[in-house]
Amino acid sequence: MKIPNLRLLKRKSNQVILTDSVVSDMSVKEEKPSATPVEEAMTQCPKCKQEYRKIDIKENMNVCPSCGHHFVISAERRVRLLVDNGFYKPLKCKVAFSNPLDYPDYEEKIVSLQEKTGMDEAVFTCVGAIDGYDAVIVVMSSKFLMGSMGIVVGEKVTQAIEYADRKKLPLIIFTASGGARMQEGILSLMQMAKTSAAMEKFNLNGGLYISVLTHPTTGGVSASFATLGDITLAEPGALIGFAGPRVIEQTIGQKLPEGFQRSEFQMEHGFVDQIVSRDKMRETLAQILRLHSKKGR
Image 1 (cartoon, one colour):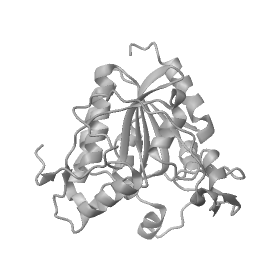
Image 2 (tube, rainbow, N blue to C red; image 1 turned 90 degrees about the vertical axis):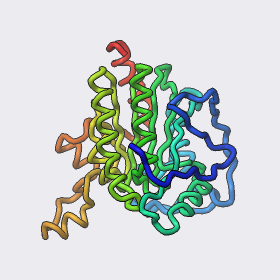
Image 3 (cartoon, rainbow, N blue to C red; image 1 turned 45 degrees about the vertical axis):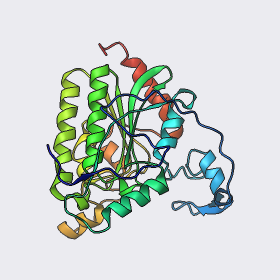
């Protein structure tokens, strides 16, 4: 489909320019970070109200040591925690920025978020090995416009699915999204159909898709590729649903059950196969990949 008003945004020199879903020849290795004044500062867990140094939370995979609350984690760091030796290869996928509704200050907001997050959009795609098993890994970031799905996000997800299909690799997608991106109107909603169609083709060709639902996974993402996994995992306490609980309560005029739409509730009702804490995610994914490694892929 031809998208009107396409313009390339300015990108920092260390950002990857993606072209034709080809893996770049760069690999990235995690370096041990040094504590900054921000990390030395204190933070409070929103669940148990205990206070910790930010650096201690970070070193514990952004998980509260007391109650296990899962804080937001950056897309790149999530990947590094999963892949062998912290090495991965970013996927190339050249996608132009578009402001089809001429939404005020939209481009400036995107540029600002690129500089703040180090990401070119709300999704990060790469290839990496987990315990020796190669996989295409897609991670959405709630730090970038709440992980909302617009034209670029939909295209990057679609091209990652198509790359996994061509290379006969399993696909792992970590979702975190507030839904479709309002700044792009109906074109953002069309990404639901596009990603779902690509996933259907991947499925018909025998591909293994592991969907990992993180907090929050809502709106158009939950109504499309997030819920099409062969195996669906979720982090503890993640909000998973289409509309939020507050909207539903206002619509039906009734009080919802305790824990409604949280991952534990969704698992109890058959929507999620297993809840996996962040420290067990690499081990769990490695086991799944090992069990499915000889199924024709």
